[in-house]
Image 1 (tube, rainbow, N blue to C red):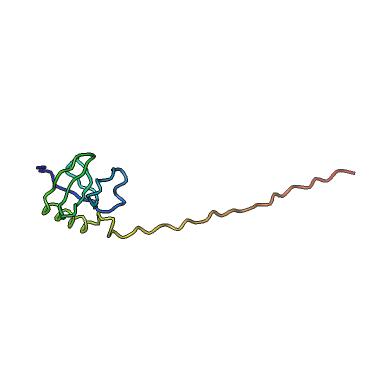
Image 2: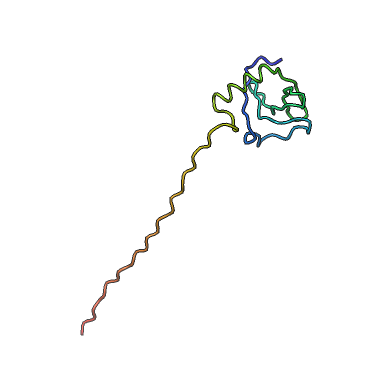
Length: 108
């Protein structure tokens, strides 16, 4: 049993660095215990697991649900986090300057 506090980041946008879980699992996000990371997944029975490569470890449902509630409250959920407004790019302004050439007069 890991005594470090559990942190959860929910959503599929947070899963870029991880491999997929076995087909029997539904991935919810990332679970973290101190410096240890893994996929937070659930099976068809509703049990929670940490999947890290080929290692699958069962998790305490009460701790997971409490960490998920904190993730929702702190906005660390990619499912319910408000989307950041995108800045509208300002088109570049192009100015064409006409060059003025001085006319020189030839002495006659």
